[in-house]
Amino acid sequence: MKKLFIAAIVLCLTGLGVFTLLRAVRAEDTPPYKIASMQAKLFYVDQGTFSDNLIDNPNHQSLWNTIIGEGDAGGSATDVFIMVKFTGAPESYAYRQIHLTATAGKKVILNRTSSTHILNDKGEGYAGFLVYDCTMEPLKLRAEITGQTAKAAIYKVINFESGE
Image (cartoon, rainbow, N blue to C red; front, side, top):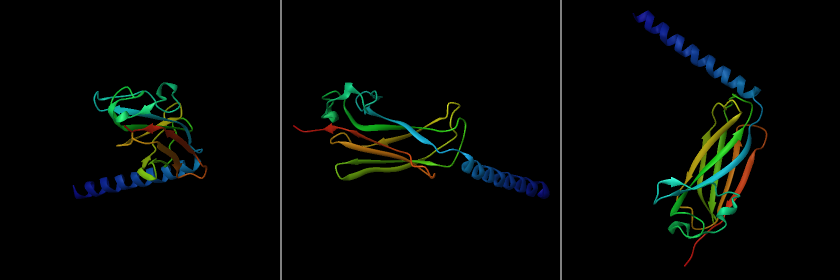
């Protein structure tokens, strides 16, 4: 019984070693990922739903006092869900990360990284981030892919405003 247990452990460790080696080799062979797009959606605290995309959307020209649902907000919102779409070779995997920085005024309010995963059969992957309490002043967003030589980044601004 003890020999069987030891054999099982050796087999598992060997499998993990092979997986790690294959992962490292595959990461070198995988072409660079690119950022395809970024979306931002308000989280409506009074409805429990999300808005349509705010970025480059002519239906959201006025984001005035979004916290109380004024302007083109469509509901009361203090938080924004950010979705970054990245692309690469279909069904490929390389250990890379999507890094998002969100700045309101001169203050960085989110500095977060999300690991990538196996891309779908269309060569697409997604990373999601929730930015809290950010609808009172312009929100500057920068997403980049780290862990590869090729540069890949996107910059967007959501023009939130507030006042009396």
